[in-house]
Length: 153
Picture 1 (spheres, rainbow, N blue to C red):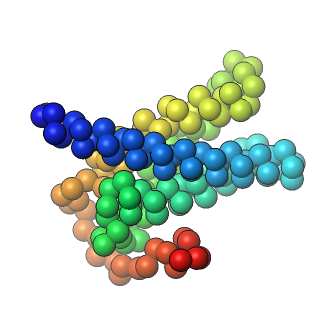
Picture 2 (picture 1 turned 180 degrees about the vertical axis):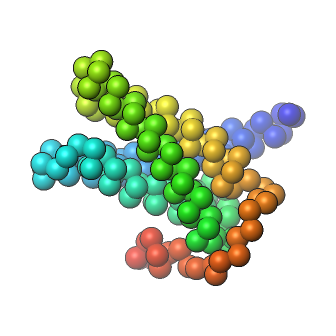
C-alpha cells in the first residue's frame, strides 16, 4: 500500500468520521427523546435512533465521503443498512455488557459502543458497500434518494 492510497483512505476515514459525528448527534438526540422524555424502552429507543442516523449517514456518505451519488440504488442502500444492522447488533451487545453486566452508566456504554462500531462500519462500508469495483450487481431500478430519505432539497 503506497502513501497516496493511505492518504486517500485517511481522507475517507476523516469524512466518514464527520458524517458519523452528525449521525451520532441524531442518534443520541432521538435516543434521549424516546428514552428519557417519552419513557420508551432503552433498546427500542436505541434502535430507532441508530437506524434514523444510519439512513442519514448513507445519504451523506454516498454523496460526500465515497462519491457514489450517480450510482445509488436500493441494493446499495440495503447493503449499507445491512452493515449498519450488524453494527447495531454489536452496539446493543456492547451496551448490554457495559451497562447491565459491568454497571457502567447507559450513555457511557453507548459512547463506548459507538466508538467500537465506528471501526466496524467504516471498514465494512469501505470494503463492501462502496468498494471501487463493486462486484455486486446493482440491477434494481435506481431512485432519487433525496425523495426517499431527505424530504427537502
